[in-house]
Length: 81
Image 1 (tube, rainbow, N blue to C red):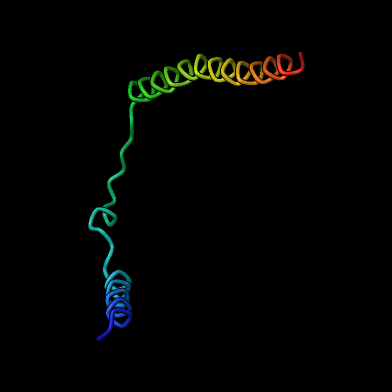
Image 2 (image 1 turned 135 degrees about the vertical axis):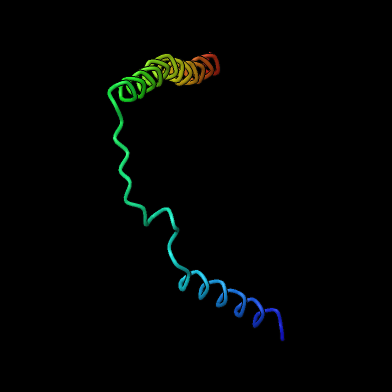
């Protein structure tokens, strides 16, 4: 067998095995998880921490962009003189 036939055979075997396999056992359970208010408060606090940390990152990114744009203007003004 040449390399192309071997690759085609292997790909076909992998595709066939993936298509004929059954679902995971965990997908067939019917247990429902009901989170209490403390879990929701904790997740809300985690989301708040992430949002608050994004504010300085956005400010820093804005400063970097304006600094890069300002340095191009300075170099253009210096080149004209």
